[in-house]
Image (cartoon, rainbow, N blue to C red; front, top):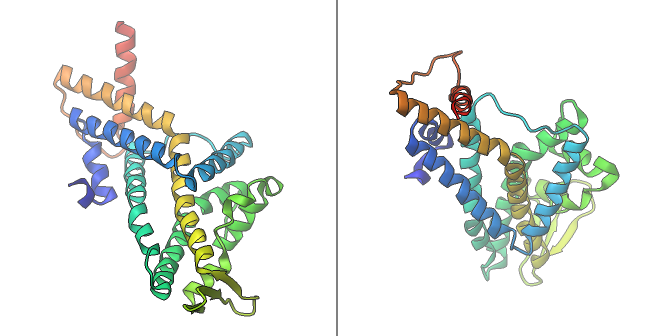
Length: 272
């Protein structure tokens, strides 16, 4: 059932002030942490996760990235669900790279590479680049330049699989696939063509998938203390609701479930 829900609908399900919703929330956190543990065993993903964590830690130290509670805890619930969906997609993506037909496989990988390239900027990297620049970032290419130049290029290697010329060549359908020699030529207007073997592009393709996962994992783990605090406050709220037989009604401008849980938790501590 969960797999058929949109992030928004699933967020609503998790937002219910009930013990069942909290159990579901806790289970989803544990599920993500198990997936993260498995990813850390991957020879491709593990080094990327380490590098992404180092980047985020530098941003925190420089005061460019702060741990903060969002306006609604439902935001986190939806993000957790989106992250679970993206983690589950790895096997499906990887199945495209095992075809014996070089042309068919290269075309499939190209489409997935383009989608992952754009999604990782939209969901993660544009926001990080804005924090570094402290102003609007106009394009993915500008964001990439900001990130690779940050700390005098300290984290440049992390983004080696994000190659604008390959992305542009795929978008403009300006790739030449040589099935006999198992090579792919990526053309982009007047730029010098990039010629890659099928195996080289396959490696770039896989690394982009795992880079997206690594960023998602590192951001989640950075915010894990906040996520666990949200769960603790929700559990305190539900205990109070059950103990005093309260009826919860959502009102615009009223206190959130988190705020009520914080109040309930403080009362519990005073009675101890």
